[in-house]
Image (cartoon, rainbow, N blue to C red):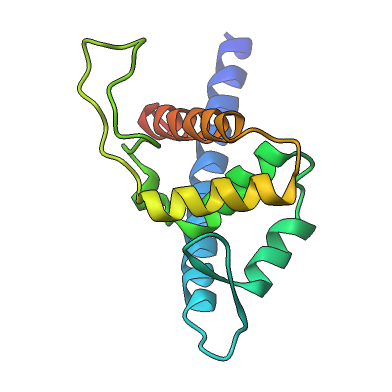
Length: 149
């Protein structure tokens, strides 16, 4: 019984940590939105969408090690979490889940900007690889959000 209680306590602790991380992410998104709104900040066109140079520098200096991790982090910074939930990269029905309706498409201008900017920065990366990674990230985000805390 002690083992079961310890496990239940550990699960409870994990749920609390998960909620704290979610709140921290929401606070980070709000802070980034404020940063995006600063008119004096220099911006860069990353393929049809203007992004602050400081935001790009922050993503570049972050823990991103690969083209796909860079693209995922940049997408998280450009979209708020609420915008990402329940959406897809293409807006088309999945071949793997024909029984489910297609999810609405994320703003294609911003998505294409992230993909093109990433492929420009990481010269030997294919757009399809970046899009697949972003799609996978959205699916995991949805699955994590749907699972009980």
